[in-house]
Amino acid sequence: MRHLAIIGSGPAGYYTAEAAQKQWGDDVRVDIFDRLPVPYGLIRTGVAPDHQSIKAVSRRYEKTALSDNVRFVGHVTIGQDVTVEELQGLYDAVIFATGAPNDRPLDIPGDRLNNIFGSAAFVGWYNGHPQFAMLDPVLTGKHAVVVGLGNVALDVARILSKTPAEFEGSDIVAHALDVLRSSKLEKITILGRRGPHQIAMTPKELGELANLDRASPRVDPADLPDEGEDALLEPGMRKSVTHLRSFAAIPESERADKSIEIEFDFYGVPRAVHGDGRIEALEVAETALQGGRLVETGKTYEIPCDLLVSCIGYRTSPIPGVPFDDRMGRFANDEGRILPGLYCVGWARRGPTGTIGTNRPDGFDVIEKIAADLDAGVLGPGGKQGRAAFDRLAEARKLDIVTFRDWKKIEEAEEQAARDGAPREKFVDIGKMIEARG
Ligand code: NAP
Image: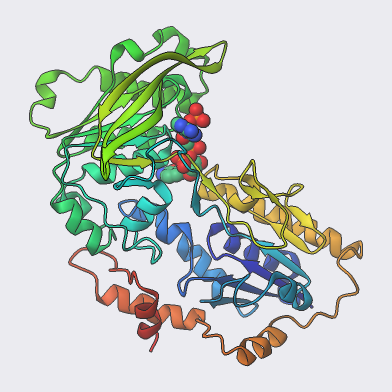
């Protein structure tokens, strides 16, 4: 019997468990740990609340979760309740699927002023992550700046733009919907340090900006490269740039009845934040590409700014004793191998890139490596006791573990609390989640 501990119950964790089942069938036992009492990681707290079809992938993870040889062990923080060394003593392999939950910092003067948030925090706020439920952003100003040219920047700009009616069918949490309902925003600037040909936005997500009830996207035609140059782009990127071209061509008459403008501001990088207590303006350094290299031109300009959300990528949380690549913000690893018996998958391995599906081959790859290491005797003589020994340790420490069955009760309570047309109203407080398990 092989015993695996997976830390993190998001897509990377569940695809790895699925791969372990395929590899060893009934000869494996997998425990999936999560510090939250609820599973699915970024599917629950990262994927936008108005993208329910993407969230539906959790049904696939549920199938894995409900099989006898995979178990969800919620409400346990590795490195705090149990150490990595202890897990290594109990399981043949320990796999970090902890994602990249921390914001890459903007790191500019003034970035500690109020109403400035990283996207992990801001997205966590509107998605009901217990860590960020108390964020309290103020949307009573006119102008928001969203930094970054990736899909997270698009999510944030879209969520800030939607009317309450456009959230029908979504699972946006009540506290966020209330704040958005009273929003006074008139302009959202998406600020990118490079140009239209360097965006990291995918076509479907970018296209959504054209179909918002009260917001209209704007691109300055002068920022667009010659159309002929689009032919050099790969097809997905070409489609995205086609959207930008169509935003540049929207006639003023069509914008007249929209109360929010989503403006793309290319070739600018945040230099400093100004304000008295709360952010009031963003100083931007103009940039240019010279032979593909990003340079500052020496010119600066200021954007009035009442809210700043920086969507410039994420970092994995280091865990004491586990080698960490500080520059890349992820575990130091060789294609998933950290140290003998310690592995990583997903964003904890690669950094914050790719789609949800990218995690599947990652999971299968790491399981192949673990199988090879087991066969080669790299992981010691075996005979580990796995979940039975973990249960003894948990009992001795009085850990309040949340099982998958408990989660199903929490889920049921969330579904019952849903407002009309919504799939659920999430608990945003860990104590309330535990209470709902009964
Ligand atoms: P991303 O795609 O890597 O985009 C990050 C953006 O931040 C880039 O435009 C980058 O510019 C910019 N940036 C980085 N450091 C900066 C700095 N110091 N100053 C200014 N700009 C800076 O990351 P993401 O948007 O966080 O998304 C993470 C992953 O999740 C991506 O793979 C994304 O596609 C995926 N995702 C998918 C969906 C969806 O499919 N619906 C939704 C959300 C997220 P440079 O390019 O110049 O470095």
